[in-house]
Image (tube, rainbow, N blue to C red; front, side, top):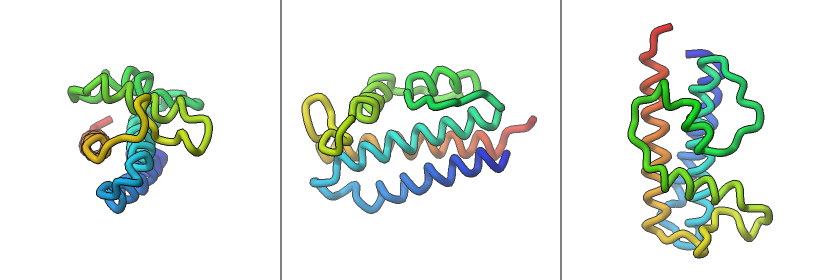
Length: 133
């Protein structure tokens, strides 16, 4: 695995560790959502870097999924991808960070986001560790 790909995965790990510490706190569900989006984004960027694609400043998970889909064989919940996209892209002010259109994510939402981010990270990590160029 390229060093730059490892760097992206390390950055994703930082987000996942943050999530693990706060996922059970009702008042931090929006922060869990934000870090879940970030962990997924960074995990997918690790794949993009590994193959030498230009990633410029892409933050759309839907776009990153589209770019990496030929390399990663995993079924994704496109609705969840879109939801996490809105959480990041639509937030312009601190009070909006990690909010759903209906408001603050529930604890169940936070756990779903956490599970999803961990699954993406694990899939990407295993793929990059085992790939042969």
